[in-house]
Structures are given as structure tokens and as C-alpha cells.
Image (cartoon, rainbow, N blue to C red):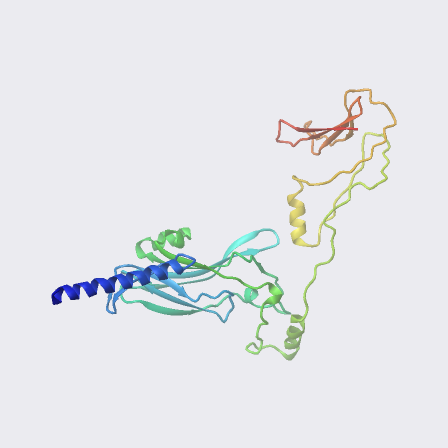
Length: 318
């Protein structure tokens, strides 16, 4: 074996070793991530690369995002944090942080980005910060991507830069519940001694909602009816809790309730169906389940809605 063959053999052997190391490292990752292979310290493959090094599992205002990236030309690198904020009436997808900067072709770079999040999200409620903002546990996402400059305006207009990007990565994170968050530092603010004391005292208090029964009893046993055309009318009071009140309003057209009935029949039902419970509307439709009794003392329950032509019928033998 001559000298040239020996050199070629060793180069091929070293290539196999490097390839096996890359495969082992890639297979050991639990989540697929983009990777770049360095051929030489001054020569890079013509590929783009972005990664957040050691992304924080819990976000605070003291957190930093260390972004490592490489571009193949004039590009835009973006980093954002999105979460689902649970308001009283609905859940809203909200962007908590966004940062973009220009990137040109060159070697791998690293940029340290300090986070500046809203104080109402990262600090514990106090005398000044009275808002309770809840973040969905599994909704906090850190995203990073590289975007072409020619589609930047369209991406901004449609707010879909991450979706349009070909090189992108995301990580899951979290934000503690309101009363598990750190206390906001007030010594940097120009607060009077009175406000400083009130803020310190209010941090120790955990707000509690007043007790409100989530189940309304419309009919209580024993119930006597007068036999006239009108029955028993009940009204549901508004909740003081905004979330409960929102759910109550939403359930007006889709109520859920349980009926337990003991019926003492004093007169024989001369018709095919005798109504026990029903609610007739002006157009002849019904807004509640219908409970009838037949000549054979069989109870019949019809469940119908305004928009339904067919009704669900339940027959109960007495």
C-alpha cells in the first residue's frame, strides 16, 4: 500500500468517525432541532441556522434569550414569546415579547436578548398592580425564525412570519400563577413611604372570590301547583364573578339541568298526552324539555330545540 492510498484510507476513516458522531448526537435528541456542520472554521455550508441556547423553562423579567444564528444572505431574524391569557370572558392568544434584527451572510453569531415582559404578567399582584392575569400552563411558546426580506412586509401584514419561515424552531416554557410570581421591586420607583408600606402589605394577601352557588334550584320539594295555566316562575340572579356570569349568559340558549320528579296524579288523563312540564313560545315551538303522561301512565319526555325539526323522545314506564 503506497503513501497516497494510506492518506486516502485515513481520510475516509476519519470521515466515517465524524459521520457516526453526528448520527449519534442527532439520534440522542428527544426533539428534532436544526443543526449545522462546520467543515472549517472559516468555511460554512450555505445553510441557515437558528437556535435558542438553554431556553428558560420559567420566564421572568430577569430571563435572557441567547440566540445563535447564521444566515445565507440578507435576512431578518425574529424571536417572540406567545401565550394564551385567560380573561374573564375568553382565552386570548397574546404576544408577550417580540424582537427582530437584520442578519447578513457570515459566520455563526450569538446574540443575548434581555426580556422585558409586562409587569402584570411576571410579578405578584399588589396594591398598585391589582390585575390578576392567568396564563395557560401549556401555552407559553418561545419561537425563533429566519425570514427573507422580500416577504417581510407580507408577513408583518398577516402576522404570520413564523409560518412563512423555512428555518424556525420553538420551545415550550411557562409563567407561574399570579401568587407564585416574585414580588415587584419598588425601590427603583419614586413612591412615598405610605405607598411602599401598602404595597408590601398587599403582597401578603391572597384575594378570594365570594362564595356563589353555581347550581340554581328552580323547584324544591314539596311543590304544589294550583292547576291554572301558568306555573312556577324562577329568575336567576347575576353572578358577582365575571367568569361565572359569562358562562351563565352563554348557557341561556344551551341550559343543562337535572330534574328529579315525584308525581302524584289525582285525576285520570283523558287525552293521549297530558302535559306536566312545558314551555311554549310565540311561534309554537318549545324552549324546554316536555314532560307528558299518557293514558297508560307512561311518562314521555321530548327534548327539542328551536332550530331542530326532529325531537329526541324518552319514554319512561311508571
